[in-house]
Image (cartoon, rainbow, N blue to C red; front, side, top):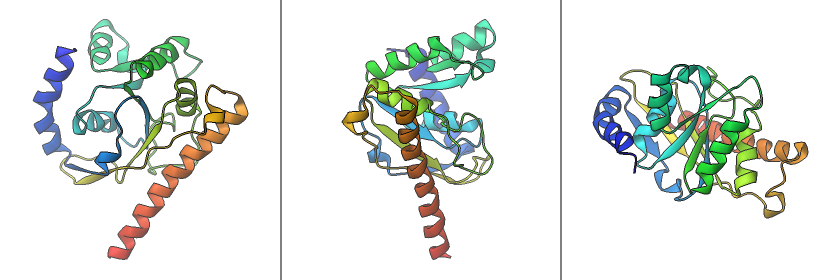
Length: 203
């Protein structure tokens, strides 16, 4: 049990909920056990909010620049972050991520590969697909309706889990990675469009 993780989670829960009031819709769709969690990435606050609103141990892929010295590396590692070099294939981060999934934990991946101001695009990387295929893990899509801002209400929508076709499990060929990535992309864009459509109908 990571005492520091749970201690920080408890003491930061209320302040962060006050600073970034976020309603979670579809919370029960976040399945137990191993899962690759994918979401849109608009702000540095995104992983902090996911950390706060769900009471379970998760791991996060984080750019290595955040863990550039011994102190930040120690702290973020305790919080579940896995350092990744976005400029090259990082075998160490891949092994750590797959180990977390093997231990039935959730792995949070922002498939766009970085922050995007326009909420979600149709240009995603294959990392999330690769982890799901190698670990035979379902994919849980999440969508932040707005860019998180201090003291502004927001919504985090959890979509239905994506269970991959068993014929693809273990196959990480370029063709299969692209098929699964397109599936993730389609679900995320549909979540975005559905919210936009429903919001317009309420006006």
